[in-house]
Each structure stands twice: as C-alpha cells, then as structure tokens.
Length: 221
Ligand SMILES: Nc1ncnc2c1ncn2[C@@H]1O[C@H](COP(=O)(O)OP(=O)(O)O)[C@@H](O)[C@H]1O
Ligand SMILES: [Mg+2]
Image (cartoon, rainbow, N blue to C red; front, side, top):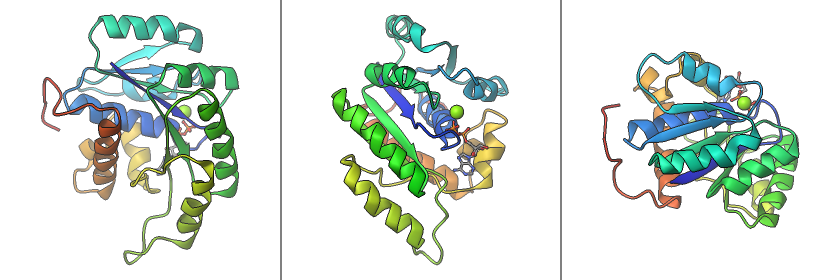
C-alpha cells in the first residue's frame, strides 16, 4: 500500500480539495483507496458523506489512530491511503508525514503560503521523507501565459529544495461545487479543464508512488 499525506500549515490552502480529488482519481482508476481524515474539522468526511456513488473508504480518526488504521488498511489489501491533515498542531502533521511514502505540500502562490511551505519542507527533510509541492488556487493562464505572480511563486519555491509538481490546481469555482457533492471535478463536468489538471497530477503522483499500470478493477469515470 502507498500512503500520501496532504499537508499545509495554512488553513484554506486547499488540502481537503486536493485530498478528495486525488482520492477519487485513485478510486476511479480502480485502486482500492482509503481517505483518512485526521482533521477535527472533518471537511473531507463531510464531502465524502455527500457522495451517492461508490467511492473511497472514509476513516474519520485522530492522528493517534493513524498507525492502527494504516495497519488495518494494509491488512485489508488497500492499494492507496490518503491522509487529509489539519493545519495544526505540528505534531499531528508530523505523524501524518511520518506515515507517508510521499508528502504533498499544498501552496497558494502567495508570500505567506510560500514562507509556510519552506518550514514544512524543512520538517520533511528532517524526517527523511519525500515531498512534492502542489500549487493550489493559482489564477488560470491568460492567453496561454502564466500570470506573473504564479511565475514568481514557482521561482521562490525552488529555494525550498523540493520539486514543484508540473501541474497544479487553478482557482476554479468547479472545485468548490464538486466537493460539496463528494464528486471529483472530472465527474462533475468532464469538459472543465480542472478534470485534466487532476488527471495529469494523479498520473504524476502515481508514477512517483510507483503505482504502475492500471488499478485492479477499472471502473468508468
Ligand atoms: N483550486 C481551487 N479553486 C477554487 N476554490 C478552491 C480551490 N481549492 C480550494 N478552494 C476553496 O478554498 C477553501 C479552502 O479549501 P480547503 O480545501 O478546505 O482547504 P484546507 O483543507 O487546506 O483548509 C474552500 O472553500 C474551497 O472550496
Ligand atoms: Mg481541510
């Protein structure tokens, strides 16, 4: 089983939105997927409970239960576990990172988010973990051009010493609409470019996790 921790010390960065969409991408690709919600706000749980179609298994737990939950998931032959984390306390974030094969650091293209990601990157290095920065809520390209603020953010993030994912999540209303129904952006509107963002990001993440080939029970999206 491969474990992904979705992390950012900033509230509202987009952790839950990313967790839900990647958990659904994994599920819809046919991987047996569990989403562990260790945030007491329970936003990921609220979203998945609104889902009417089959989906990832939800584990509403606290950080202290992560070890046991992961062991059970491994025993029950899950392929992928995603952990949606709270912004604080640091100790809970560190527990999630410690369990992860890959930590996704969610970052909006703003000065304060970048400063916060630099500190999270330092923690991940200290723990000897693998990290990937995922830009979130970036303004969409205009006329094919990356907005200057996004370009600058990507340059600044180079100094964190962790790679930046080749595709991030743009600021799009569809992320807010689909999460309210426990649906992925691709399920909600297959014509919206957000679906492509998530599909490309999932392909990149799955390759880093060495989840090769197709899931075992491929379902139609
Ligand atoms: N890519 C995006 N585009 C538009 N709105 C977004 C996006 N990502 C998150 N949001 C919105 O921002 C708010 C915070 O997102 P959320 O995923 O709950 O962040 P976190 O879990 O880090 O606190 C929510 O209202 C969510 O719908
Ligand atoms: Mg959240």
